[in-house]
Image (cartoon, rainbow, N blue to C red; front, side, top):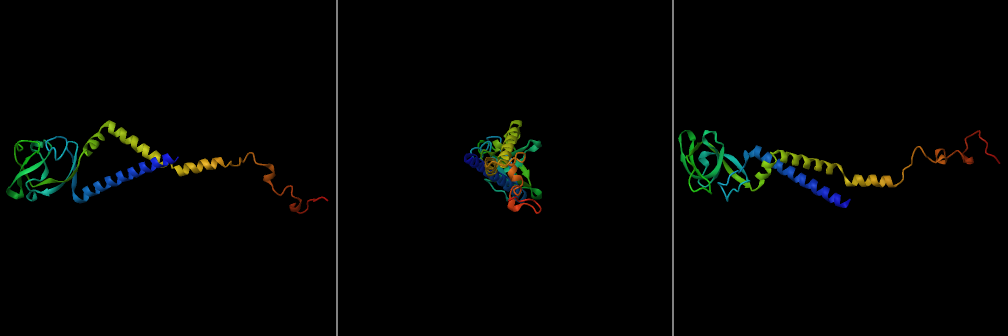
Length: 202
C-alpha cells in the first residue's frame, strides 16, 4: 500500500507539473504573442537541432538585426522557414528585405524575403518537437489516451480510502438478518425494568 501511495503521489505530481507547464506556455503565447514551431530539417544545426520547438514572437522587420534567427513565409506558399538573418535592406512602405541563411548551409537562401514583420526566436526546447509530432499520430493519440486513463485511475484509487474500507471490513460488522435475540430488546428479561402492569415474581 505504501508503494502504491508513493507511485500515486509521483504520478499526480508529474501530471500537475505538466498541466501547469502547458498552461504557462498557452497563456504566455496568448499574452506575449509567442508562437511554437517544430524544427523538421537540419539547416539550422547545431543551434537548432531537428526536433526542437522554437518559440518565436512577431517583430517588426525594421527592428530585426543581423544574427537574429527568424521565421518567415517562403514565397509561392512553400511553407515556413527558420533561418538566421545575414543582412537587412529597408524597402518602401515599411517593408524590409531579409537575406537569410541556415547555419548548416554554405550559401544564402535563393532570394531575399520582403516582409513587414517576422517571428524572431525567443527561446527553443530541444527534443520537444519529437513528442509533439508523435502525439499527432494514431499511436501517439493511443498512448496519450492510455496515460490519461492511468492518471484518472490513480487519482480515483485513494490509498487512504482503500485502507479505511479494509479496516472497516475487518472489524466484523453486524448482520441485520442474524442479530442476537437478546440484543433486539434489552428490557425484555430484566425484572427491574419490566413495564408497568407486568408480574415481577417473588
